[in-house]
Length: 407
Image 1 (cartoon, rainbow, N blue to C red):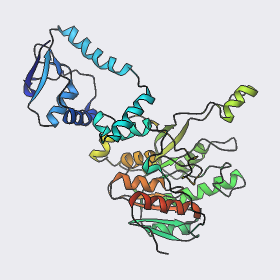
Image 2 (cartoon, rainbow, N blue to C red):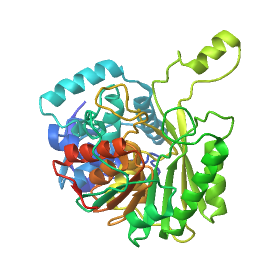
Image 3 (cartoon, rainbow, N blue to C red):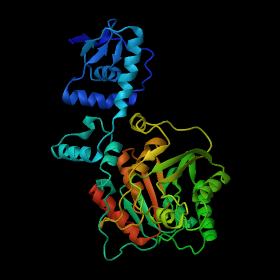
Image 4 (cartoon, rainbow, N blue to C red):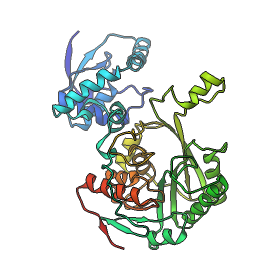
């Protein structure tokens, strides 16, 4: 089988190609640039591409004039069938994740850029799910809590206040008249994780309703709320249902409900043990609903970079590993991975946005804002002084900068 060099202008993409490949072009181009054009494009005798449409687009992006080509003698039916088979059969195989992780870890240690191999940042996060990524790493807890209720810290353009998000005065203090462009938060659950002071569910729901109403009053034009609702509640009521009702009562429009899938669910959880021991079906919880609502009006468009990244996550199911809070460095009971708010910022945020997190927790939203690189300003509220210390130290560790107490 002869490999020939052909001018790219001679090659004709199959007009009816059903494969959507624009989001893959950048990765293939990186691979060709790093390793060379080692896989030829397959064409028929009329120079119609049978296999290699993405490689052809990548070659044009790289400014190449020629590419290696293998010409196959096929009739129309064979050409179409083989083109489909070539794409489909490549999807069937699976990875041995442990072996893949070991090899990638070795290559990473040899200074190989793993994204040149076709893996996105999200892919790598999931592959290395058993490790704590730099952006997910929290500092060791200090023996003494420094932050006091009412303290306000400046972290570059970002602000953190230690206070109650259900107190309108605290909200007004941190916003300083700014309109919110996007809310990204994971509010406290009504359960036994020590994340709230509610003695009963009616008090909890009343406070959440008040907090949401105050937030909605301060939303800017076309603002979006990205709210991780959780599916854990110590009473037989739906937290997602509570939040959805309040959002819709406030006049917001429902955009999406995203399912956050957490791989690696434990089949020895207390809920599964109820199935084994008591014949009561209580499945292990492997996903959380994320509610996405917006103010009525036009939708904002993503940046080019955000569009390319989110094309790698085109469904409403996001599989992202949780952060193992048993690590000694982590001083928070429910640490969320940075990948979740990072995707939210790319999908729904824009350059220069005011990003608001009323339940800042361990500061995950703040780190995502730093990572997104959209020149956004994060305004945070956290009621627990110890968690505020964690947020500050985490930001300082991630950026190498120093936070300042300003009030």
